[in-house]
Image (cartoon, rainbow, N blue to C red; front, side, top):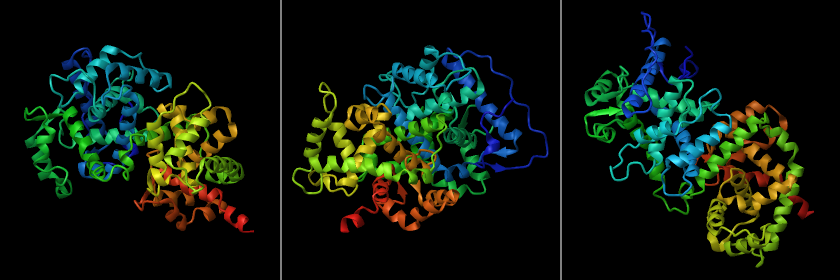
Amino acid sequence: RPLPFCFGEYTTFTLEQQSTMPAAPPPARQGSYSTSSGLKDHIVHALKLAKSDLEANHQKANFVRIIMRFPQIRSVFDRLKAIHAKCDVNGDGKISIEELTGAMAELMNDGRAEGRASIKPEFIKRTLSISEVDESEETKGEGLDVKQFIVMCAIGFILADENKELSTFGGMLASGDDAYRRAMTDVVTAYLSFDREGKGYFTAEDFQGFMSASKRADAARNVFSDERFAELDVSGDGQVDFEEFVYAFSKWVSDEDEEEDDEDPYLSRKANPLTPRVLLALQLSKNKLEKNKKGVNFTRIIMRFPKIHKVFDRLRSIHAKYDKDKSGNIDLTELYDAMNEIMTSGDETMDKEQIENIFMLSDLDHQGAQEGLDVKEFIVFCAVGFILAEAGGKSAKLITGEVSESDKEYRDAMMDIVGAYLTFDKDGKGYFTSDEMHNTVQAVGKKDAATLLTPERWRELDIDHSGVVDFEEFVHAFSLWVTAGDDEDEDE
Protein backbone atom coordinates (compact mmCIF):
# COMPACT_ATOMS: atom_id res chain seq x y z
CA ARG A 1 0.00 0.00 0.00
CA PRO A 2 1.44 3.45 -0.90
CA LEU A 3 2.20 5.71 2.04
CA PRO A 4 -0.54 8.34 1.86
CA PHE A 5 1.04 10.82 4.25
CA CYS A 6 4.42 10.86 2.48
CA PHE A 7 6.28 10.64 5.79
CA GLY A 8 9.46 9.46 4.11
CA GLU A 9 9.80 12.75 2.19
CA TYR A 10 9.82 15.06 5.19
CA THR A 11 11.93 15.56 8.33
CA THR A 12 9.14 16.62 10.64
CA PHE A 13 9.59 13.59 12.88
CA THR A 14 12.21 12.07 15.15
CA LEU A 15 13.50 8.81 13.67
CA GLU A 16 13.74 5.85 16.01
CA GLN A 17 15.21 2.62 14.70
CA GLN A 18 13.10 -0.30 15.84
CA SER A 19 14.48 -3.73 16.56
CA THR A 20 11.19 -5.42 15.76
CA MET A 21 9.07 -5.41 12.66
CA PRO A 22 6.21 -2.85 12.81
CA ALA A 23 2.69 -4.08 13.20
CA ALA A 24 0.72 -4.77 10.04
CA PRO A 25 -1.59 -1.95 8.96
CA PRO A 26 -5.21 -2.24 10.11
CA PRO A 27 -7.60 -3.94 7.69
CA ALA A 28 -9.64 -1.80 5.31
CA ARG A 29 -12.70 -0.19 6.83
CA GLN A 30 -16.03 -1.26 5.32
CA GLY A 31 -18.38 0.95 7.38
CA SER A 32 -20.88 3.45 6.04
CA TYR A 33 -20.27 7.18 5.49
CA SER A 34 -23.98 7.91 5.78
CA THR A 35 -24.12 8.11 9.59
CA SER A 36 -22.13 10.13 12.10
CA SER A 37 -20.96 6.98 13.86
CA GLY A 38 -19.89 5.39 10.57
CA LEU A 39 -17.98 8.51 9.55
CA LYS A 40 -16.29 8.63 12.97
CA ASP A 41 -15.24 4.99 12.51
CA HIS A 42 -13.60 5.90 9.20
CA ILE A 43 -11.76 8.80 10.84
CA VAL A 44 -10.41 6.49 13.55
CA HIS A 45 -9.39 3.95 10.92
CA ALA A 46 -7.60 6.66 8.93
CA LEU A 47 -5.71 7.71 12.08
CA LYS A 48 -4.68 4.10 12.66
CA LEU A 49 -3.37 3.98 9.10
CA ALA A 50 -1.34 7.14 9.74
CA LYS A 51 0.06 5.60 12.93
CA SER A 52 0.88 2.41 11.02
CA ASP A 53 2.73 4.43 8.36
CA LEU A 54 4.82 6.10 11.04
CA GLU A 55 5.78 2.74 12.50
CA ALA A 56 6.49 1.24 9.08
CA ASN A 57 8.99 4.04 8.47
CA HIS A 58 10.50 3.79 11.97
CA GLN A 59 9.26 7.25 12.82
CA LYS A 60 7.72 8.78 15.89
CA ALA A 61 5.22 11.63 16.20
CA ASN A 62 7.04 14.61 17.68
CA PHE A 63 4.97 17.60 18.76
CA VAL A 64 8.01 19.73 19.59
CA ARG A 65 9.17 19.51 15.98
CA ILE A 66 5.67 20.48 14.88
CA ILE A 67 5.85 23.64 17.00
CA MET A 68 8.94 24.66 15.05
CA ARG A 69 6.88 24.39 11.85
CA PHE A 70 4.05 26.66 13.04
CA PRO A 71 4.98 29.46 10.55
CA GLN A 72 4.72 27.07 7.59
CA ILE A 73 1.46 25.60 8.90
CA ARG A 74 0.12 29.11 9.50
CA SER A 75 0.77 30.06 5.87
CA VAL A 76 -1.32 27.08 4.72
CA PHE A 77 -4.08 27.95 7.21
CA ASP A 78 -4.02 31.51 5.83
CA ARG A 79 -4.68 30.04 2.40
CA LEU A 80 -7.61 28.06 3.82
CA LYS A 81 -8.94 31.29 5.32
CA ALA A 82 -8.73 32.84 1.85
CA ILE A 83 -10.59 29.88 0.32
CA HIS A 84 -13.21 30.17 3.07
CA ALA A 85 -13.65 33.86 2.23
CA LYS A 86 -14.08 33.06 -1.47
CA CYS A 87 -16.59 30.25 -0.82
CA ASP A 88 -18.59 32.44 1.58
CA VAL A 89 -20.64 33.92 -1.24
CA ASN A 90 -23.25 35.60 0.98
CA GLY A 91 -20.60 37.04 3.34
CA ASP A 92 -22.14 35.74 6.58
CA GLY A 93 -18.83 34.36 7.87
CA LYS A 94 -19.91 30.75 7.35
CA ILE A 95 -19.82 28.27 4.48
CA SER A 96 -23.11 26.48 3.84
CA ILE A 97 -23.46 23.08 2.21
CA GLU A 98 -24.56 24.77 -1.03
CA GLU A 99 -21.48 27.02 -1.07
CA LEU A 100 -19.24 24.07 -0.23
CA THR A 101 -20.72 21.84 -2.94
CA GLY A 102 -20.19 24.59 -5.50
CA ALA A 103 -16.55 24.99 -4.44
CA MET A 104 -15.99 21.22 -4.68
CA ALA A 105 -17.49 21.13 -8.16
CA GLU A 106 -15.07 23.88 -9.20
CA LEU A 107 -12.11 21.92 -7.82
CA MET A 108 -13.26 18.73 -9.51
CA ASN A 109 -13.62 20.52 -12.86
CA ASP A 110 -10.12 21.88 -12.33
CA GLY A 111 -8.81 18.30 -12.32
CA ARG A 112 -8.24 18.07 -8.57
CA ALA A 113 -10.17 14.80 -8.12
CA GLU A 114 -8.86 12.61 -10.92
CA GLY A 115 -9.82 8.97 -10.47
CA ARG A 116 -12.28 9.70 -7.67
CA ALA A 117 -16.03 9.24 -7.50
CA SER A 118 -18.48 12.07 -8.13
CA ILE A 119 -19.41 14.48 -5.34
CA LYS A 120 -21.96 13.05 -2.90
CA PRO A 121 -24.06 15.82 -1.25
CA GLU A 122 -25.07 13.56 1.63
CA PHE A 123 -21.43 12.84 2.45
CA ILE A 124 -20.62 16.57 2.32
CA LYS A 125 -23.54 17.26 4.64
CA ARG A 126 -22.34 14.60 7.09
CA THR A 127 -18.75 15.89 7.01
CA LEU A 128 -19.94 19.46 7.52
CA SER A 129 -22.06 18.35 10.47
CA ILE A 130 -19.22 16.51 12.21
CA SER A 131 -16.94 19.53 11.72
CA GLU A 132 -19.26 21.88 13.63
CA VAL A 133 -17.09 21.87 16.75
CA ASP A 134 -18.14 24.27 19.54
CA GLU A 135 -21.46 25.02 17.87
CA SER A 136 -24.69 25.55 19.82
CA GLU A 137 -27.74 23.44 19.04
CA GLU A 138 -29.57 26.57 17.85
CA THR A 139 -27.00 27.34 15.13
CA LYS A 140 -26.07 23.80 14.04
CA GLY A 141 -26.54 23.27 10.33
CA GLU A 142 -25.98 26.93 9.40
CA GLY A 143 -22.46 26.32 8.07
CA LEU A 144 -18.80 26.37 9.09
CA ASP A 145 -16.73 29.26 10.39
CA VAL A 146 -13.02 29.45 9.51
CA LYS A 147 -11.73 27.15 12.29
CA GLN A 148 -14.48 24.61 11.61
CA PHE A 149 -13.61 24.78 7.92
CA ILE A 150 -10.00 23.87 8.75
CA VAL A 151 -11.36 20.93 10.75
CA MET A 152 -13.37 19.80 7.73
CA CYS A 153 -10.30 20.07 5.48
CA ALA A 154 -8.25 17.96 7.90
CA ILE A 155 -11.00 15.32 8.06
CA GLY A 156 -11.28 15.30 4.29
CA PHE A 157 -7.52 14.95 3.96
CA ILE A 158 -7.25 11.79 6.05
CA LEU A 159 -10.44 10.24 4.66
CA ALA A 160 -9.27 10.79 1.08
CA ASP A 161 -6.03 9.00 1.90
CA GLU A 162 -7.95 6.16 3.52
CA ASN A 163 -10.23 5.75 0.48
CA LYS A 164 -8.63 6.55 -2.88
CA GLU A 165 -12.03 6.79 -4.59
CA LEU A 166 -13.66 9.20 -2.15
CA SER A 167 -14.06 12.86 -3.14
CA THR A 168 -13.52 15.26 -0.24
CA PHE A 169 -12.74 18.97 -0.14
CA GLY A 170 -9.60 18.48 1.93
CA GLY A 171 -8.48 15.65 -0.32
CA MET A 172 -8.93 17.69 -3.50
CA LEU A 173 -6.84 20.53 -2.08
CA ALA A 174 -3.99 18.07 -1.45
CA SER A 175 -3.78 17.18 -5.14
CA GLY A 176 -0.43 18.47 -6.36
CA ASP A 177 0.03 20.80 -3.37
CA ASP A 178 3.01 19.65 -1.31
CA ALA A 179 2.84 22.56 1.15
CA TYR A 180 -0.80 21.79 1.98
CA ARG A 181 -0.15 18.04 2.24
CA ARG A 182 2.80 18.58 4.55
CA ALA A 183 0.85 20.96 6.79
CA MET A 184 -2.04 18.50 7.10
CA THR A 185 0.44 15.72 7.77
CA ASP A 186 1.80 17.89 10.58
CA VAL A 187 -1.71 18.28 11.99
CA VAL A 188 -2.25 14.51 12.00
CA THR A 189 1.18 13.90 13.52
CA ALA A 190 0.59 16.52 16.22
CA TYR A 191 -2.63 14.73 17.15
CA LEU A 192 -0.91 11.33 17.25
CA SER A 193 1.67 12.76 19.67
CA PHE A 194 -1.10 12.42 22.28
CA ASP A 195 -3.32 9.66 20.89
CA ARG A 196 -0.38 7.26 20.58
CA GLU A 197 -2.60 4.23 20.04
CA GLY A 198 -4.68 5.84 17.30
CA LYS A 199 -7.87 5.06 19.17
CA GLY A 200 -9.64 8.24 18.08
CA TYR A 201 -9.33 10.30 21.26
CA PHE A 202 -6.96 11.13 24.10
CA THR A 203 -7.50 12.05 27.74
CA ALA A 204 -5.86 14.37 30.25
CA GLU A 205 -3.86 11.36 31.45
CA ASP A 206 -2.57 10.77 27.90
CA PHE A 207 -1.50 14.39 27.77
CA GLN A 208 0.31 14.14 31.10
CA GLY A 209 2.00 10.98 29.84
CA PHE A 210 3.29 12.85 26.81
CA MET A 211 4.65 15.67 28.98
CA SER A 212 6.48 13.31 31.30
CA ALA A 213 7.85 11.11 28.50
CA SER A 214 9.09 13.94 26.26
CA LYS A 215 12.76 14.82 26.62
CA ARG A 216 11.99 18.38 25.54
CA ALA A 217 8.57 18.79 27.16
CA ASP A 218 9.55 22.23 28.41
CA ALA A 219 9.63 23.46 24.80
CA ALA A 220 6.01 22.38 24.33
CA ARG A 221 4.77 23.59 27.71
CA ASN A 222 4.18 27.14 26.45
CA VAL A 223 1.70 25.79 23.92
CA PHE A 224 0.41 22.83 25.93
CA SER A 225 -0.13 24.20 29.42
CA ASP A 226 -2.64 22.53 31.72
CA GLU A 227 -5.16 25.24 30.81
CA ARG A 228 -5.02 24.16 27.17
CA PHE A 229 -6.87 20.94 27.89
CA ALA A 230 -10.03 22.92 28.63
CA GLU A 231 -9.72 24.47 25.14
CA LEU A 232 -9.25 21.02 23.63
CA ASP A 233 -12.13 19.29 25.40
CA VAL A 234 -14.86 21.37 23.79
CA SER A 235 -17.61 18.88 24.60
CA GLY A 236 -16.48 18.58 28.23
CA ASP A 237 -16.61 14.78 28.20
CA GLY A 238 -13.00 14.33 29.35
CA GLN A 239 -11.87 13.10 25.92
CA VAL A 240 -10.42 15.01 22.98
CA ASP A 241 -11.22 13.60 19.55
CA PHE A 242 -9.49 14.50 16.28
CA GLU A 243 -12.03 17.19 15.34
CA GLU A 244 -11.71 18.95 18.72
CA PHE A 245 -7.93 18.80 18.50
CA VAL A 246 -7.76 20.36 15.02
CA TYR A 247 -10.20 23.09 16.10
CA ALA A 248 -7.94 24.09 19.02
CA PHE A 249 -4.73 23.53 17.04
CA SER A 250 -5.83 26.01 14.36
CA LYS A 251 -6.22 28.65 17.08
CA TRP A 252 -2.79 27.98 18.61
CA VAL A 253 -1.10 28.23 15.22
CA SER A 254 -2.85 31.56 14.55
CA ASP A 255 -2.46 33.09 18.03
CA GLU A 256 0.30 35.42 16.81
CA ASP A 257 -1.95 36.67 14.02
CA GLU A 258 -4.64 37.69 16.53
CA GLU A 259 -2.10 39.72 18.50
CA GLU A 260 -1.09 41.54 15.32
CA ASP A 261 -4.71 42.27 14.50
CA ASP A 262 -4.98 44.33 17.70
CA GLU A 263 -3.02 47.11 15.93
CA ASP A 264 -4.59 50.08 14.13
CA PRO A 265 -6.77 48.37 11.46
CA TYR A 266 -5.65 50.84 8.80
CA LEU A 267 -1.99 50.11 9.40
CA SER A 268 -2.54 46.38 9.71
CA ARG A 269 -2.56 44.67 6.32
CA LYS A 270 -4.20 41.64 7.90
CA ALA A 271 -7.27 43.71 8.81
CA ASN A 272 -7.98 44.52 5.16
CA PRO A 273 -10.79 42.27 3.89
CA LEU A 274 -9.02 41.91 0.53
CA THR A 275 -5.85 40.42 2.05
CA PRO A 276 -7.10 36.80 1.95
CA ARG A 277 -8.28 37.34 -1.63
CA VAL A 278 -4.84 38.59 -2.66
CA LEU A 279 -3.34 35.46 -1.11
CA LEU A 280 -5.78 33.24 -2.98
CA ALA A 281 -5.10 35.14 -6.22
CA LEU A 282 -1.36 34.50 -5.83
CA GLN A 283 -2.06 30.80 -5.30
CA LEU A 284 -4.23 30.66 -8.41
CA SER A 285 -1.56 32.49 -10.43
CA LYS A 286 1.08 30.04 -9.18
CA ASN A 287 -1.09 27.06 -10.13
CA LYS A 288 -1.85 28.61 -13.53
CA LEU A 289 1.84 29.12 -14.31
CA GLU A 290 2.62 25.56 -13.25
CA LYS A 291 -0.30 24.15 -15.24
CA ASN A 292 0.90 25.95 -18.35
CA LYS A 293 4.46 24.80 -17.59
CA LYS A 294 5.68 28.38 -17.49
CA GLY A 295 8.24 28.36 -14.71
CA VAL A 296 9.08 31.74 -13.25
CA ASN A 297 12.49 33.04 -14.33
CA PHE A 298 13.65 36.40 -12.98
CA THR A 299 16.50 36.71 -15.49
CA ARG A 300 14.03 36.35 -18.35
CA ILE A 301 11.81 38.99 -16.75
CA ILE A 302 14.80 41.38 -16.54
CA MET A 303 15.12 41.04 -20.31
CA ARG A 304 11.49 42.20 -20.57
CA PHE A 305 12.08 45.37 -18.52
CA PRO A 306 11.78 47.65 -21.60
CA LYS A 307 8.30 46.29 -22.41
CA ILE A 308 7.23 46.50 -18.77
CA HIS A 309 8.62 50.05 -18.67
CA LYS A 310 6.37 50.96 -21.60
CA VAL A 311 3.28 49.82 -19.67
CA PHE A 312 4.45 51.68 -16.57
CA ASP A 313 4.76 54.83 -18.71
CA ARG A 314 1.11 54.45 -19.66
CA LEU A 315 0.15 54.11 -16.00
CA ARG A 316 2.19 57.21 -15.22
CA SER A 317 0.22 59.11 -17.86
CA ILE A 318 -3.09 57.99 -16.34
CA HIS A 319 -1.82 59.00 -12.90
CA ALA A 320 -0.78 62.45 -14.18
CA LYS A 321 -4.12 62.96 -15.93
CA TYR A 322 -6.18 62.41 -12.80
CA ASP A 323 -3.78 64.17 -10.44
CA LYS A 324 -5.88 67.28 -11.00
CA ASP A 325 -4.29 69.37 -8.26
CA LYS A 326 -0.79 68.39 -9.48
CA SER A 327 0.24 67.30 -5.98
CA GLY A 328 2.07 64.25 -7.30
CA ASN A 329 -0.56 62.01 -5.69
CA ILE A 330 -4.03 60.79 -6.62
CA ASP A 331 -6.26 61.08 -3.57
CA LEU A 332 -9.27 58.84 -3.08
CA THR A 333 -11.71 61.35 -4.62
CA GLU A 334 -9.53 61.72 -7.73
CA LEU A 335 -9.25 57.92 -7.91
CA TYR A 336 -13.06 57.63 -7.92
CA ASP A 337 -13.19 60.12 -10.81
CA ALA A 338 -10.54 58.15 -12.69
CA MET A 339 -12.40 54.88 -12.22
CA ASN A 340 -15.72 56.41 -13.34
CA GLU A 341 -14.18 57.61 -16.61
CA ILE A 342 -11.96 54.59 -17.28
CA MET A 343 -14.59 51.89 -16.66
CA THR A 344 -15.07 50.37 -20.10
CA SER A 345 -18.70 49.37 -19.75
CA GLY A 346 -21.27 52.07 -19.17
CA ASP A 347 -23.71 49.80 -17.37
CA GLU A 348 -21.17 48.78 -14.72
CA THR A 349 -21.39 50.38 -11.29
CA MET A 350 -18.22 51.27 -9.42
CA ASP A 351 -17.70 49.39 -6.18
CA LYS A 352 -16.33 52.14 -3.91
CA GLU A 353 -15.67 49.77 -1.01
CA GLN A 354 -13.42 47.58 -3.16
CA ILE A 355 -11.56 50.62 -4.47
CA GLU A 356 -11.04 51.87 -0.91
CA ASN A 357 -9.71 48.49 0.20
CA ILE A 358 -7.28 48.24 -2.73
CA PHE A 359 -6.31 51.87 -2.03
CA MET A 360 -5.43 51.02 1.59
CA LEU A 361 -3.36 48.00 0.53
CA SER A 362 -1.49 50.19 -1.97
CA ASP A 363 -0.93 53.17 0.37
CA LEU A 364 2.41 51.84 1.60
CA ASP A 365 3.54 55.08 3.24
CA HIS A 366 0.21 55.26 5.12
CA GLN A 367 -0.43 58.89 4.19
CA GLY A 368 -4.17 58.27 4.08
CA ALA A 369 -7.07 59.01 1.75
CA GLN A 370 -6.42 62.76 1.65
CA GLU A 371 -2.76 62.51 0.61
CA GLY A 372 -3.38 59.69 -1.84
CA LEU A 373 -1.17 57.43 -3.95
CA ASP A 374 2.03 58.44 -5.69
CA VAL A 375 2.96 56.93 -9.06
CA LYS A 376 4.63 53.82 -7.61
CA GLU A 377 1.70 53.19 -5.27
CA PHE A 378 -0.69 53.66 -8.21
CA ILE A 379 1.21 50.89 -10.04
CA VAL A 380 0.75 48.75 -6.91
CA PHE A 381 -2.98 49.59 -7.02
CA CYS A 382 -3.17 48.39 -10.63
CA ALA A 383 -1.22 45.18 -9.93
CA VAL A 384 -3.40 44.27 -6.93
CA GLY A 385 -6.53 44.97 -8.98
CA PHE A 386 -5.20 42.82 -11.79
CA ILE A 387 -4.58 39.69 -9.71
CA LEU A 388 -7.92 40.07 -7.93
CA ALA A 389 -9.64 40.32 -11.30
CA GLU A 390 -7.75 37.25 -12.48
CA ALA A 391 -9.00 35.34 -9.45
CA GLY A 392 -12.56 36.29 -10.35
CA GLY A 393 -13.18 38.25 -7.16
CA LYS A 394 -15.67 41.08 -6.73
CA SER A 395 -13.09 43.58 -7.95
CA ALA A 396 -13.01 41.95 -11.39
CA LYS A 397 -15.07 44.87 -12.73
CA LEU A 398 -12.29 47.37 -12.05
CA ILE A 399 -10.32 48.83 -14.94
CA THR A 400 -7.29 46.80 -13.92
CA GLY A 401 -9.18 43.67 -14.88
CA GLU A 402 -11.04 45.06 -17.89
CA VAL A 403 -7.86 46.29 -19.60
CA SER A 404 -6.16 42.95 -19.18
CA GLU A 405 -8.82 41.25 -21.30
CA SER A 406 -8.28 43.47 -24.34
CA ASP A 407 -4.71 44.63 -23.94
CA LYS A 408 -2.12 41.87 -24.26
CA GLU A 409 0.78 44.23 -23.56
CA TYR A 410 -0.74 45.31 -20.23
CA ARG A 411 -1.66 41.76 -19.29
CA ASP A 412 1.80 40.41 -20.12
CA ALA A 413 3.46 43.12 -18.01
CA MET A 414 1.23 42.37 -15.03
CA MET A 415 1.85 38.64 -15.34
CA ASP A 416 5.58 39.41 -15.41
CA ILE A 417 5.20 41.23 -12.09
CA VAL A 418 3.34 38.27 -10.59
CA GLY A 419 5.93 35.84 -12.01
CA ALA A 420 8.80 37.96 -10.67
CA TYR A 421 7.22 37.95 -7.19
CA LEU A 422 6.67 34.17 -7.27
CA THR A 423 10.36 33.73 -8.05
CA PHE A 424 10.94 34.47 -4.37
CA ASP A 425 7.65 33.35 -2.80
CA LYS A 426 7.80 29.92 -4.40
CA ASP A 427 4.95 28.51 -2.28
CA GLY A 428 2.61 31.44 -2.93
CA LYS A 429 2.19 31.96 0.81
CA GLY A 430 1.85 35.75 0.56
CA TYR A 431 5.33 36.84 1.58
CA PHE A 432 9.02 35.97 1.33
CA THR A 433 12.01 36.43 3.64
CA SER A 434 15.55 37.69 3.05
CA ASP A 435 16.80 34.09 3.22
CA GLU A 436 14.41 33.09 0.43
CA MET A 437 15.58 36.03 -1.66
CA HIS A 438 19.23 35.11 -1.02
CA ASN A 439 18.63 31.47 -1.96
CA THR A 440 16.89 32.52 -5.17
CA VAL A 441 19.75 34.80 -6.18
CA GLN A 442 22.28 32.02 -5.52
CA ALA A 443 20.23 29.57 -7.58
CA VAL A 444 19.97 31.97 -10.52
CA GLY A 445 23.72 32.24 -10.98
CA LYS A 446 23.31 34.90 -13.68
CA LYS A 447 25.18 38.21 -13.57
CA ASP A 448 22.18 40.41 -14.41
CA ALA A 449 20.02 39.03 -11.60
CA ALA A 450 22.86 38.98 -9.07
CA THR A 451 23.66 42.64 -9.86
CA LEU A 452 20.05 43.71 -9.46
CA LEU A 453 19.19 41.60 -6.41
CA THR A 454 21.88 42.84 -4.03
CA PRO A 455 21.51 42.84 -0.22
CA GLU A 456 20.88 46.59 -0.41
CA ARG A 457 17.72 45.89 -2.40
CA TRP A 458 16.19 44.27 0.67
CA ARG A 459 15.86 47.67 2.32
CA GLU A 460 13.88 48.87 -0.69
CA LEU A 461 11.63 45.83 -0.49
CA ASP A 462 10.90 45.61 3.24
CA ILE A 463 9.12 48.95 3.52
CA ASP A 464 7.47 48.28 6.90
CA HIS A 465 10.64 46.65 8.37
CA SER A 466 8.66 43.54 9.30
CA GLY A 467 11.33 41.11 8.09
CA VAL A 468 9.09 39.80 5.29
CA VAL A 469 8.03 41.26 1.92
CA ASP A 470 4.43 40.97 0.76
CA PHE A 471 3.14 41.35 -2.80
CA GLU A 472 2.39 45.08 -2.54
CA GLU A 473 5.84 45.89 -1.17
CA PHE A 474 7.44 43.86 -3.95
CA VAL A 475 5.53 45.65 -6.71
CA HIS A 476 6.50 49.03 -5.21
CA ALA A 477 10.21 48.11 -5.32
CA PHE A 478 9.88 46.38 -8.70
CA SER A 479 8.54 49.60 -10.23
CA LEU A 480 11.69 51.32 -9.00
CA TRP A 481 13.95 48.71 -10.59
CA VAL A 482 12.19 48.84 -13.96
CA THR A 483 12.37 52.65 -14.10
CA ALA A 484 15.79 52.96 -12.43
CA GLY A 485 17.33 55.13 -15.17
CA ASP A 486 14.42 57.53 -15.63
CA ASP A 487 15.58 60.19 -13.17
CA GLU A 488 19.04 60.24 -14.78
CA ASP A 489 17.47 60.70 -18.23
CA GLU A 490 15.40 63.62 -16.96
CA ASP A 491 18.52 65.29 -15.49
CA GLU A 492 20.22 65.10 -18.86
